[in-house]
Amino acid sequence: MYKLLSATPSPYARKVRIALQEKGVPFELVTENPWNSDASTPGCNPLGKLPVLILADGGTVYDSAYILEWLEVRHPCPALFPADPEQRLAARRLEVLCDGVCDAIVLWLMESLRPASQRSQPWQDRQVRKIEGGLAGMARLVPNDAEFSVGDAFGLGDIAVGTMLGYLDGRYPALNWRPLYPALSERFDRLHQRAAFRDTVPVPQIMEAGVV
Image (cartoon, rainbow, N blue to C red; front, side, top):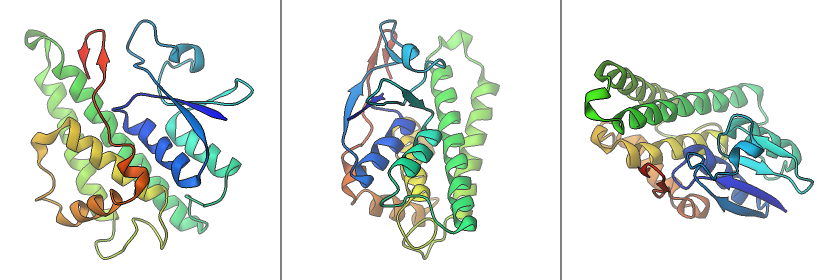
């Protein structure tokens, strides 16, 4: 059985948890905070980042995008990557965009945790522009009248969109994106009718420097 090193608020780890559950792949969830000094993450991923999939032989697979691709090769059914090359590229484009928004949210959040006298407002403003631009870009790419984000089946695009919007809700509620993008709001709510989304709702964690 696999083990998944995960942080509960992480949208990247959530993508992997959703994929594992949708594919019916059994795994043991190991929750830790990579910021803490006693974290085992650096011993499993040279970059010290979560998530990390630990294999039965002790090998590791890391970076959420690569883990999802690895799982698609090792556990192809049900498929989460579209078979059509153009749709596959469209799904990967959504993933890159959504991961970029999540990256900007992390950078904005970490800057906000610094003492007020040490914060860079231009830096935070730059991250906000990335968040707002990425959200607008995603709204243009996701068809309003389609059940799924890409193609005619649930897959990578839906996982990327749903996890990003969930992270945005929890980490940057000041944006209040729902009235701006009602079609995305409806899509987000539909995605959370799936058990894999309901079972992986992000929650805060305690780290040595405080709650994140």
